[in-house]
Amino acid sequence: MEKRLLLAVLLTVLVVVITPKLLPRRPVAVLPDSTALSTGGPDTTPRPQTNRADTIAAPRRIGAGGSFFTLTDTAAFRIPAETSSAATTVATYTFSNVGATPVGVQLHQYRDLGPGDGPVQLVRPGVPLLAYRLVMGVDTVPLESVRFTANRSTGAPATSAAGGAPLTFEAMLDSLTVAITYDFVPNSYLVHVTGSVRGRVPPGSAVEVLMPRGLRSQEADTADDRTHRAFVLKPTDDDVESIAFNKLDTAQVRVDTGSYSWMATRNKYFIAVLLAHDAQPPFRMVGMRAWAPVGRQIGAADGMVLQPLDRNGAFGFDLYAGPQEWRRLRALGHELEHANPYGSFLRPIVEPFANVVMRVLLWMHERFSLNYGWVVVIFGVVIRLLLWPLNQKSMRANIRMQQIQPELQEIQRKYKKQPEKQQAEMMKLYQKHGMSPFSMFSGCLPMLLPMPILFALYFVFLNTIEFRGVPFLWMTDISQRDPYWITPIAMGLSMFVMSWIGLRAAPKNPQSRMMAYVMPVAMTAIFWRFAAGLNLYYAVQNIAAIPQQWILARERQKVASK
Image (tube, rainbow, N blue to C red; front, side):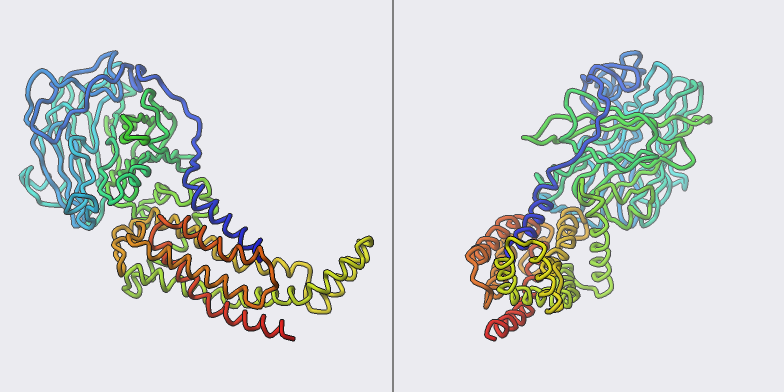
């Protein structure tokens, strides 16, 4: 019994403690900081704050020295930044006319859980969500310093809050006319972005889209949120790859070339995705570089995608800036639901269980209009009831094994020097009691079956935004640790009670008694800082199993008294 328990505990520790720290990374090409992704050049200037009316660079071309991650100098003359806004039922977007960039995304249905208050604001102060550049031959034209004129197709003023109407920005730059249009999808976080470059456009020209240096953190645990910051790539012919900011270098630019369906930057619960339009060429290059670390973690990183202009000088992609809701991302296709994968490198094993568990929990919440805390309680009881018959059968097989142990030991002693005779006599004994040599392993099954669900729940509570900020009883957020440590203590105590009941009338074994005292303490220490919802589920599982353990202990006593 104690060996099976130790095996189950070791498996738990392996997945829920070691797994999050082991993230594989494919080898990729990197370029020195002085090498350009487009035409070459070092990164020496700061990113302009296009959402403020301050000094912004004059439009100019970057010649052979221009590059990705090199923004224009804040010199020349002043260009006052004006903003335009558009609102849907779920979000409000704010755009700057300088660079035609989104500088604010407010999510109506999610609250800031950090020191601030109000709805979630995805965009970090002073850093636009996107920035554009034109790559034309040996020149790179930085549109982030160009003043555009904003127009609505409905004729509404550029500063109006009317939602739903497409918003178009136009600008003249030398002999070029550049237009960028944002078309907002109702009841969605999706924005269709289309652009065109008219004029003398050299063949092979492309648009660079620069991504933000990480989304704004608005979580109660900002350090935990920072560990989840990552870029995510989807090659058109390969699996989704997640690259944590901590895996990037501050002195080198990581460059991946090929064909990419989308690129995203995310934190723990929110994401900004650039998804190439089916009618437009896919992204042909992605680039990433880390910025200054915060302690041992990378606080920010830049990203870029390169999309060729089509023969008409057009480009286009979809922008999703919002929550990592599994259903919304899945509905967009292109495997976007894997942008925040469950299970890390164990994803092929864990993710199927996690998807099933998550769907069941979401369905119970919607079907019965219950708080997610009660959903977890009911789910834990239901799982234990479903496993009841199997537990009953396995534990009774274990009792029978204990019953014939004296006879097995006698056979082993008597035929110690006759292995074949020993095996034959043991088989006769098993058949006499309606058992087999594999019956000894059946007691392990009930212990191992709940483990995949427990592992899946660990990642579900770690990644699923539906649990974010959900209060239950004394817990302010079931996705965070219990503020009063009640659930991990209840989990440890219930585990000890189960072990204590299981030892009643069991054969005297010092190791078993030691495990009964040590393992609850060890498991409590392991789960101490895990999500309160996970501890709640484990405690409910243990409590729901106590009656069955009591019944089987009484049966064991009756067998022992014969």
